[in-house]
Image (cartoon, rainbow, N blue to C red; front, side, top):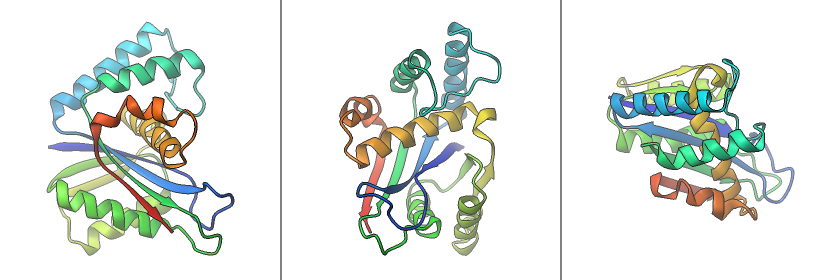
Length: 193
């Protein structure tokens, strides 16, 4: 069984500035053993840093030490990922969850005949992904929403999508951050809208 974890970055709609993007990342652990080792390693880090029980590794809001330590851990975890980035270059076109869901489901259908996915809470994206699964008759693709605070591996997806966002937007820190996970990429698809 393959286990996947999804998070998104950006907002659908028209561009509000020149480097505006809508992204989704799927982090994949190719076995239960790899998934469980990842969970255990995150638990060890959590204890090492003496963090509160409900602490969330969240890329955009973590202080420097937890963020740095989690970044180091990411490079050691045995996962792969797919990122879809829609660049909203045209201030009149709309980047949509429907479109990004279809692109992600293309990759899932190609690569994973059977996968169980957890995603961060986003009812609109969840609805679009479920619609894609139904329309494509992908009965072996299972998906459920779960708040990232309660899923350490959705937190991995949060870091991956945030790093991917920096890469897609070509920010100054992008190369340094992306190098930590570059060897884990299955697909990094960028679309200019």
